[in-house]
Length: 260
Length: 260
Image (cartoon, rainbow over all chains, first blue to last red; front, side, top):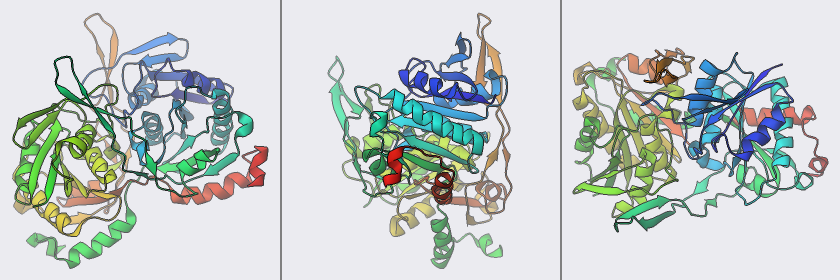
């Protein structure tokens, strides 16, 4: 039985993680190692300034007082009895789309798994009052079982967004590119009890670049969106461009540069 | 005079940010908006669960009780008198190389600036007891003035790592790709005063994939490494691959998929 690590960023007590666990426990030896509380928008952050406590909540279920990324690295290095064959993260309450995935604790947990060379998948559903976790669970089962069998390309994870609808209303699955959120920038002003102004980030309605092949438009059309994400952020086109251009412009003038 | 936003992840009281400010204040109207304390390894994290306080420390210098990403978004939306022409982040104490840039608060601040469509640059130096901030400051001045004049490609920031040596020992500047850190995974075990085991992430020595064109090897050879980083994490090769392969494998079996 392959070992499967289940984590999330909504915290151990979120229903989404139990739904994901319910899906993958049929595929292997599943362990939950998740943050002890909600850590949304944690990004790919590690806790370096203090030690972390691992609590065994029950058999094969652990909480850590840290970020999703902490959970993955501590789980793999210290908690699990062996190296996992798969890392799954979610099911997040709130879609993870476009550039916003860099904020996402859910996706960052999958990034961390990928850095360990382990096939990793992030699962999310758009925000709502009610969640069709049975839909998400069926999708997670299908995709996780495929990935366990066929693995994933080098340095690449899957960012899966699932429409929050009944199973029969899902129109299918599509591979997508990461879309682009255009400026939104909502920040609310609020005051503390002593009348001092504070700022609270959030509350905006994002505006998205359109494109049939994007994650956002695919999800909106009630398809499951699967975006292959890689860890190499180098813009290779820009790299070639700069190599020519900056030298041509005489941008750099360290004398010794000419020697090379 | 162009408006320039200066931030970092080591916090307002770090010498690196004053060195960066000293460099760019000759190029425009420079403002500092930085975390009130060290926020290393914060990743691209936003604070959504509480309001943020902006404190004016002195003219054009502000601290925020949040992450580097918080600082950039609050600065642009609420603090600065107009939209900046440039965002610079650093000078970080500690290099930001390879996949580890996704952990970096310094780079994440530049990611946030880029999401606003503003040319953004992250500057870092390898960890040391003593820092050649005069070298870093000269480099930052050169690169920032070039970028102010010529801008940057769409959706692309520069991740600059500067050797921690005297100016005359810098061998030049090179454009590089993001290298790859191989498994390191150092976690120390420690005990609280009541004898409970805790884990403390850190203390390892990373092992890097070799490659002359990588950020790490370039920096080690005493060249300034400049890596163009973009925000689109889609693995397009994998995208084409999956579109063929998963369909061929009959991976997806929602009835309605066939209709599309």
